[in-house]
Length: 71
Image (cartoon, rainbow, N blue to C red):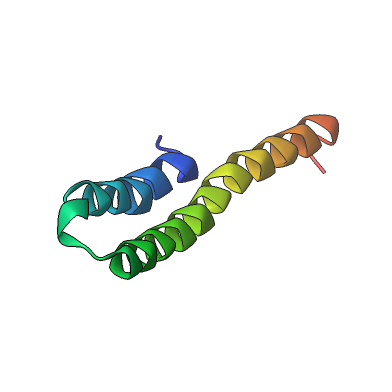
């Protein structure tokens, strides 16, 4: 079974990293580079928060289920 964190990494973070990797910084003005970085960082950070919160929520639900089995 694949976790939500793995799905988010594969579907969102990796493509964002790959898109950033192909940008040639020598071909951008400072303003363009700042704009590209801001676009990347905003999106990557939002998905990284999802990637962090999902396993924490799963762990919390597992603990609740272990504490109150069969209810």
